[in-house]
Length: 286
Length: 196
Image (cartoon, rainbow over all chains, first blue to last red; front, side, top):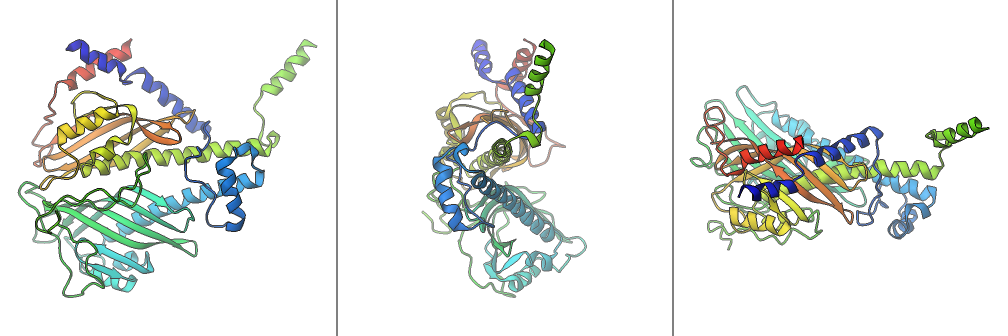
């Protein structure tokens, strides 16, 4: 038995192999560059803002078929410029969503609503869909007054981003993990969690939120925990009803629901849209 | 004469300054730097998608993040060799694909540090998962290796021992109760491997 375990661990690079690789990696970081070429199977970089499409389409074919050496200097500059644009777009979207989170934490509804596109939408749990910054700002008042109030905690952390920028660099989608910590005076604290599936649009060079959909998946009492407390989601408000009903009807914990994935499987490239939803006898899903 | 030759050789071997490089050489360097940034992002993405699959029990999709000869070692349950065994272990330990009613097992993926190897074919990540589950809280620490096969980044090795594991009462009152035969064995083995 002992020998078997040792044999297993001999295959594991828990010792020397690992450190050798890491040392190499750090060397690369200092030299700011690695030695590989962009593989042909990665998204083609020949697309995007700041370029003329007519000029780039022939380049698209070239990047797929022709090694970098056979491309002209001008062609390569155009392609690399576009790849850098996509990296910048991804960073801008990460900043945008993080900024939304910091505003939402502190009840800065005016500022948070201003991050949305004119026809942008906001959907939180089962509260329904609010459209446009003015409606979104009022919907957020249902969470508390502007700037919150003493004794309130409204932390909505924006974590674990998987951002996919469209080929033309004009729109993007992202999945985020949303951990929640809530408190109000006179009530016990709340732990929660959910998933964001959001969309973004670039208008006049500025990234804005086109669709924010927060799928709350679980909320519980701080002291009791999941085995003793499952707090149901709020439904649509009677005080300020939404523009549209919830786009998807589902239960939070103890029910289970898989917020649909916007991205394809990063290794197989297969769609994740056909992952079956688990059954729910309350919702009536078999 | 010999000395002059040496000087010529030394000059030829010296790194060329930016002015001496051809536009193609400068573009080659730029390509490497952009590729490295793209690789850093992609490795982070694979690690984060792994977390989303764990959250919802998507074991088939999770196993497809691994290279055919990849290894998995989590929760002190030993080392599983190969993509097929990763799937078999997940489905045996945690049931068939899909989330279960009344079960919460979120493995939120945070704080990645990625290193891309000089040849751009392998990478390492140090990152952590913050576990929020019906069982309580947990904090695995990952040291994972990735490999780029046909331009696609995949797990080559996943190792995520728990650094904290407690009931909902919290780490102040409950201690780690990681089961399994391997946690102490593993540490001894690693130390031995390093000392060889």
